[in-house]
Structure formats: structure tokens, C-alpha cells
Length: 157
Image (tube, rainbow, N blue to C red):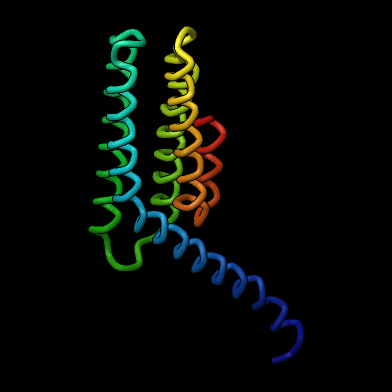
């Protein structure tokens, strides 16, 4: 094999390896998805419970309903991913996961913007604690696939 033919084979080898790595990253985040869904559901329930008598109930119910819908869509996406063959093409699954992470992050961020109780320091600290905890959790659960982490974190804080 001459140098020119080796040079032309390197980009395809590199592309193939990058494709494999991306596929493994997607597998990792989908493996963590059930835990993410449970944690988000439990913490969202705690948020609704804690803020029930402090903020407008209509806004809280709309937020809770939106969170349920987003988490259900993410669960359906995860179910679809796991029902595919052992090596599914990862591109559209990666996009779906990233969009779901961004939507979930935006809902968490909305709590700090639209449901921040101006007259209750205890509830403000509770919201801050929850949002920081969700951000810290994202570090361990989403950084295997950085686009999902970048979609979640900035809009959640």
C-alpha cells in the first residue's frame, strides 16, 4: 500500500471510529434514561407539593402537566430505542434525546423564572436547591453525550 492510498483511507477510518464512539455515547445516555425519568418525576412531584400553597395553582398545574408530557415522550423515545436492533443507527436517537433533555431543562428553568415566590425565602431556597441538584445530576447522567448536557444545563438554571 503506498502513502497516498493510506492517506485516503485515514479519514474514513477516523469517521468510522467517530461513528462508533457516538453510538456508544448514545447507548450510555439511553441506559441512564429510566433513572433520569424516575428522578425527574419524583422531584417534579416534590416541587408541586412544596409550592402548592405558595404560587398560583394554575401555573403550577400547567408546569406539572407539561413535565408529565415531556417525560412521557422521553419514555416513549427510550422504549422505541430499546426495541430496535442491538446496533440501531444513532443519529435520530441522539437528536431525540437531546431535544428531550433541552425540553426538560427548560421546564426546570421555568420554575425559577415563573414560579419564584418573592415573599418566601424558604421556598426560594428550596427552588434553588432543587435546580442546583438537577444541574449536578445532569453532570453525571448527561455528560456521556455532551450535546444533551449542553441542551439541558443552560436553560435549567
